[in-house]
Image (tube, rainbow, N blue to C red):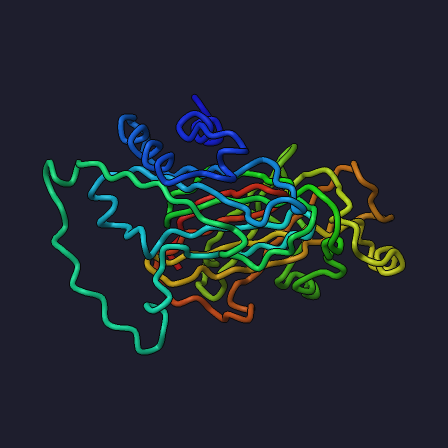
Length: 325
């Protein structure tokens, strides 16, 4: 079975040069071609490399095809979210490119009544759309050489992840985490960065995570584990502090939690410690764990309801994880 990245390249077949200067007639043709396929879901394309000294934008194409019923259940204009992760710093940002800014104002007009739920043959009809967005307009981007990852979600549908290298010269290097965030709790409390009974097991390579309420309902726990290769981005903690605290590396991760039709996702950005006797060096294998109560964050406890969660780390997007809190 083809991966989402392979489907994106096949169904949105544009070269880097075409992606950078894509025209409306090309977008129209992509939409027409996609509508003749059985594909259902979300896809994203962006150039693999952009020169910051000769280009002034980072374009991306997002395409979707879905049933009319799906379009009624998950309103695209309210639920399309695009994520940008600076792989070198771990910083992740979110944007809702189809949301009308006027709808987010305090005195925004009340939404018009929704049409009746489609049924029968009307519900099985197909809706196709292709958009072009400029990441520099959507996000607070440092226009300097570096590596970024782009992904799109629509509630519980996720696109492929597209990594982009910004080539060229100039600009300051990306900042790296220098301390554990949030700080570990004493004893067996949360946050915890040690393996625990009933918690996720570290994979041989890659990342795993979950979001669930505690059995007593008091906590909203995001827990995960990973085994990855150390990079310079993980080695920002001063060496004296690293040795004193027994921390070999810091791995930046972001958990995004979405509620249907909410104007923005909740973003939780953390620096997870990997414990060791000495600071890691690039290429070392890093195994880490985390269990963090979302209710203790600056956002406070999430209201009771249905949510989906995604994890952004190391240029990858994991999820969705559906949860009832």
